[in-house]
Image (cartoon, rainbow, N blue to C red; front, side, top):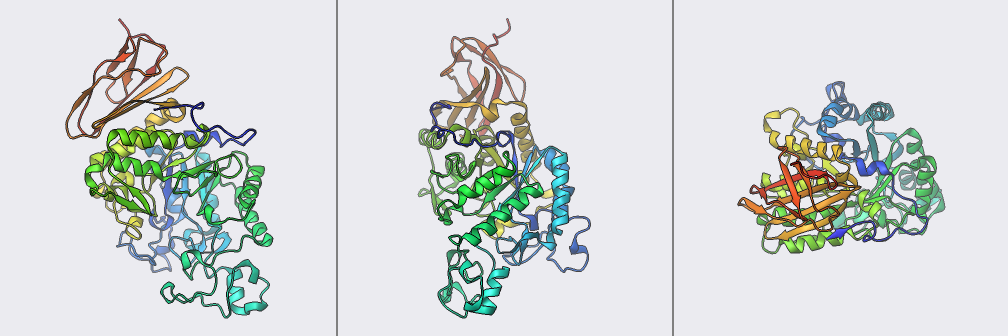
Length: 507
């Protein structure tokens, strides 16, 4: 595998490149209700929230808020995080807040608009970024325009904001009844689908996008953008956002390859779930059944090294290089079981997957709690409260591992921008190097249960003799006549070496 700017899909002529800050970022995804209650939380006042850390439910609230996030910015910076992505924060009657009823108001339970202002100011003061979730395909049944139609029926001036099949509306029917008489996301009556073909609806949504970029957010994560098929809408969305802040980030939630979405006219990056599926298939192969598993309808088979390498190469060559670097590399999220659960509790596999995520092209995104070993099946178990109240349950070794990996990315530009060249994919070994203007990072994985020694050829090298330094213990690895010295890699471990190809080994 050799993936460079020349090998990857070319950018369309004149297309707009994604913001460069994304390449340097380590993202952290936060589900606001479950991350942290602030010291002044409403849970300590008038609202009877569920106890923090109680078993999660699909309808219960545990009282996390935006000031709680702000109070843990020191923790996040020490982890190595430079950018936050928040699940929806706008007013809603759901704990996940994908059921929006006011796009211009941050939910009062999260602290309202003033709390977002405080959080954003503190984030920016630290040189960090903040991206919000934009749910523009559907709304909650409490959305003001939908409520108007419920009350006034066909006399409402907002009828054509939705696709309605009859009156009166039945917003509290059940999917099982099959008698929802308006278009709804996945047929769920609590999620009426907006008629984005209506120019007035388009203008409304574009004003929402404009409003919060003006407010100071650093970008939008677009929820299910493929489900808005209105020609030209996302192009207009990009024009509006970039017209206010050219370095704003637009990332689309796309579970597949995202072909057609990264051509410079819509998104800057995609939610690259494929990287996580591949990592799970190789590094946690022993935990998967023989037939593999399915995550959100996507097959995850166990992978031998050669098959894994081939699919990684295909993934990296799908889009222009700038967009590969600006996509978010996911291992888990609020929409799937946590990676610790999928790996069968194999801490070694999780460590390897995190190392793979942090050293591959693209911006790594950590789902809150993954760094301390938080586990869980699908919704609602994947949305547990962060265990601030039980630090004895944390995997502190894993936490240190993530901090170390994030530090490596911060210290070595080659791990953020470097081209990728495969050196070995055989048995339990996957090795590659990344190169950038004379700098090199050599990454050697051993997914097996036994220690190994590996000798690698410096494929594509420009210098025959040079030396690299082990990022963990400082030992020296020499390349002589285009071949690296034998590398010892312990079982279920990774070794990372960094340096420059233009420096000769010392005598």
